Length: 283
Image (cartoon, rainbow, N blue to C red; front, top):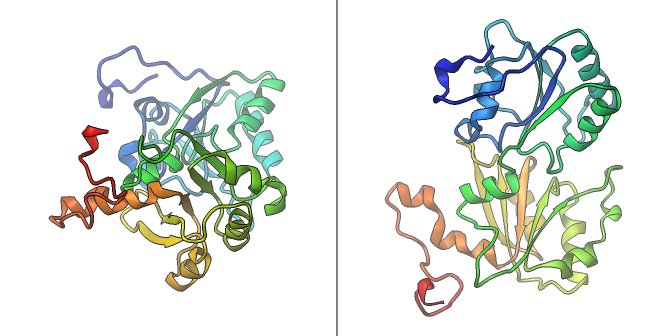
């Protein structure tokens, strides 16, 4: 069943009828799709995809495959999670080869664990295909590394709301103390309250913040700001969801590592944004 013509030589797995493959499509740029995902797209009878999966990726589906939209977007009419999971079960029981395609990584704030557990409980065989998470890949496209020896020894990934959509369900005081760099998914709606909670827990008002919207796509936008002003600055700039937010000194490294600007011939704004006063290799 595998279309080996677009894959390098290898023992690529076959998708069997009645199986559901839970697959990450990466943060947006089609070039960040894994070979296992490409293999799955070439075999699936049905592709059940999220809102943030790029149309160019969907175009790689095999001819005749059914594409089913199952996007969930905050504040907009969306399919209920229970209905999505039950639909996957019905498709598998009908003998379809089912690809559940999610933006980023299915196990990083993507509800892949919930869907996978439901499938297993109903006797549906599954395969998991990880993807590049937006909190890592999206920030990398903005020139922001989530770890740097001179900045942090830990990074915290957190969602901007709990399962009921409330910011109060997250212990922001604990998050503030957890590590030098905080990466926030789905936080734009509650950004003002999140920033206030982090400052109240001891993070500095002037702490660097970077907001990356439409990460890895041609219309990517990056806002460099501070914790105290990030919500107002985002509103002024018209930056909304989907976006990933980086809180911490790692955001400063964009001044040196904005590789997309460097590729266009622009010099780095600051080769030593951390103020180390020495070459990094001397560290």
